[in-house]
Every structure is written in C-alpha cells, then in structure tokens.
Amino acid sequence: MQVFEVGQVTGYIKDLMEGDDLLADIWIHGEVSNFTRATSGHLYFTLKDGQGQLKCVMFRGSQRKLGVELKNGLSVLVHGRVSFYEAGGICQLYADAVQPEGIGELYLQFEALRVKLEAEGLFAPERKRPLPKYPSLIGLITSPTGAAIHDFLNIVQRRFPLVEVLVAPSSVQGETAPQEVIAALESLSHYHRTRRPIDLIVIARGGGSAEDLATFNHEGLARAIFASPVPVVSAIGHETDYTIADYVADLRAPTPSAAAEMVTPNIIDCRMQMAELRRRLLEAMLRQLRETRESLERSRARMERNSPRARLDARRRAVDDLVARAHLTMSHRLQMIREMLKGSVLRLGALSPFQTLQRGYSLCENRTRGGLVRSRSSVDPGDVLMIHVADGSIRAEAMETGQALIPRPSMEARV
Amino acid sequence: MNEDPSLESLSFEQAFEKLQTAVQALEEGGLSLEESIRQFELGIRLANLCGSLLDQAEMRVSQLLSDGEELPWAANEP
Image (cartoon, rainbow over all chains, first blue to last red; front, side, top):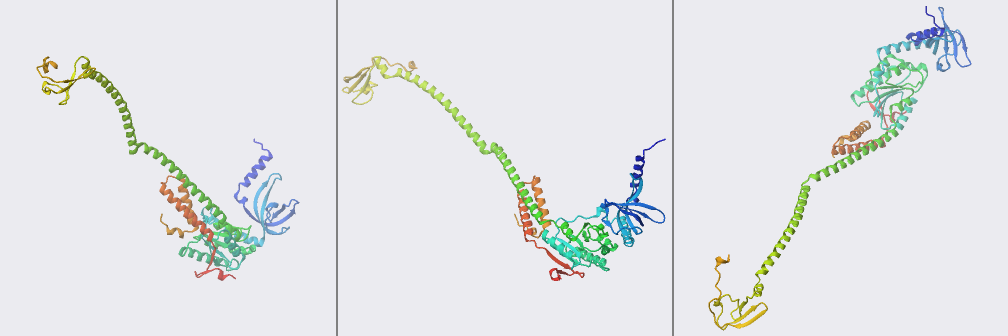
C-alpha cells in the first residue's frame, strides 16, 4: 500500500486541473454571492446557480476587463481558468474578465465567432503576411471626418513622406459600417489589381465605446479582410479589447497613430542606413582597389623577371661578362705578346748592323749615287763613298772594282 | 558607363534593395575590377537617388471614390 503526503496529492490535483483545456479558458454564467474586496485589492466572490457553486478570485492585476461593479445577486458572465488552490484546499476560478449578463451575450456571440473563424484558420499565424519595410502606396479605410485620419496622416508625413496614401472613405460605426468597410476593401483591392499595387491597407477608427466595436466583430468583414490581396492592418482604436478584425488582420495596431508608426520606417533611420551603405560601398571599393594594386605589384615583379627586356638585360650582362673576360684574356695575351716582342727585340739585336759592325764589318754608302753598296756594279770609279764602321765613318773615293775576295755562300747553304 | 534611365523611375524601396545588393556583391568580393567599379558606380548612383528621394519627399494623399474615381485629398477636406 502506497501512502502519499498531502502536498503530493494537492500538487497532483492541481496538475490534473491545469492540464485540462476546457478549464484553462472558460466562460461561466452564474450569480454573484459572498462578494468581498480585500485590502490588497483582490476581489473574492462565489458564483452559483441552482446546481452548485464555485469560488472565484479576481486579482488586482487582472481587473482590466472588469466590465461591471460586482455585487451580490448580480447575474454575470465570468471568464478565467479553473484551478486548484493548494494552500486552501479548494478548487476555484481565477477570473480575468467579468461582464453583466446582457453584454455578456454579445461576448458569447463574439466568442462563438472567434472560435469558428479560428478553427477555419483565419487567424493562423503562418498566413500573416509581412509588410513591406518601405511602402510606397498605403490604402487607408476610415471616416473622412474623424480624428483617426488626421492622426494617421500627420504621423506618416513626419516619419516617411515618401509614401502616398489612398483614402477609401467609409463610416466605421453604425448599422451600415460593416458593408461600407467591405466595399472600401473591395475597391482598394480592385485598384491594386488594375491600377497600381498597394503595399498595405490600414482600417482605422479613432476610438469609441465598446458597443461601437460591433462593426469589427462582423463575420463578413472578417472574411473580406482574409480575402484581401493586400496585407491589412487593423487600427480599431481600442487599446485593450481585441476585435475579430484584429485577429484576422495581418497586423494589429492599438490605435491609428500606432498603425502609422508601425507601417512606416522613420526617415531618420533611412538616412542613417543610407550613410552606412555609402560607407560600406566605399570601403569595399577601396579594399578591392588596394588588393588589385597589391596583386598588380606582385604580377609586375613576376613579369619583370620573365620579360624580353629582362632577357635583354641578362644578355647585356652576359656580354659585359664576356668583355671583362676578354679584357682579361687580352691582357694576358698582350703580356705574352709583349714578352714575345721583348725576345724578338733581343733576337733582332743580334741581327743589328751595329752589332755586325762591332764584329769588324763595315757598311758602305755611295754618296755619289745614293744607297748602300751591295755590289761592285753599284760603284763607279771616282764615286764618293762613306764607309760606316762601329765607331764612326770614313769618307773615301772609289778607285776601281774587282772580283770578290770572299766567295758568296749558296742559297742552299744558308737555309 | 551608360546612364541607365530606368534607374530614375525606381521607388525608394527598389532603389534601396538594389543598393544593398550592390554593397553585398562588392563586399563579398570575387568580382573583376571592372565589374567592381561598375557595382560601385551603380551603388553611388542608387545612394544619390535614395538621398534625393528622401530630400524631395512630400506625402501625397488622394481619395478613392466608390465608383473607382481618384481625387486629390486636399479638395475634399472638411
């Protein structure tokens, strides 16, 4: 047998109740009794009918939708969640909205329509269309005489005057309002398809009582918004209450002024973004230029190593080398030649007539005829001769010619 | 570079998108120098266009009647 602690059981009961979808979001019809207002501001009461009773608490922070002054015996509709209060050991309703029975009927109709359209997928988050960041044409459905249109246009003019606004006038409250708004939606859709594309449509209403919201809880209008080829923004002018139009619209704005802010960018932001894009553009271009220049430098260095001019330079250098080497060689050779010449001079010296003269020979010059005397035929008797000897010369006169005293050696013998 | 006359008819949003595309293309790199310069010049022209659109902007308001007729709004103000 398993035994539980109390806290385990109360926790279990609480989990059970809070896991129940019906109890988590429920409207309950009943009569108020045991009503007390605590000093903390929380409201405590009991809802009862002929069958049973249910303890209720409405916390101070949940009383925004307290649509009636509570008192015992009042018949009301209460919305909230039913859960288990562990510390008190009681099951109770945590209320967040209370409506008197009459208006409560409207709420029940509203809830029925909301549930129905939600089931059909009209509120599905995935079908919400994004709005263009920089709209150029906005369709505006509103009363041409209300405050809403002035609020809206003033803010759009201040934030993003690039935009054009096409107003489709329509009454936004009263019997005929739903059909007028539907007609305005249709004529804007037609304009969008046949004339110029409209970026978004705003349906605006500048405040009013809760009863006047009926226009925007109209099923036909909800379906027209859903069918619109252009994204629709609801700006019904009621901060707290959601209408069916709010649920089905692509975007819900609490007021027309808020809608104007939400559908337009701020021109100051635009200018800042433009400046930033300019900076990035310039930076990217400068970077590319820098990289190109660097790569060009590398290419040029590589090309210069391989260019014809470089080859020519290389050849020129080779020639220079050769010339230098040639110079060196030549000087060697010149040296050799010089040496050879020196030897030759020495040898020539041996052949010099003066050396011969030293050895006792003489040279005879015919001063009368000119020229050296090589043969007896080159002298006639009486010619003046100059006889050169090693240490001087002797002037003489030829007397007669005769046979050689020394026989001439033959050519063969000389070789 | 040839002037592209179609550029002047762009809306702010179109010009802004084209500018962003040009900036991204240039930042990603890998373009030839010539193509980069082309993108850069296009970007500068788009930036100038966006700037002048912002400077000259004056909100226009018109009214669409139920018969489809379009009228200037100011004439209908109460």
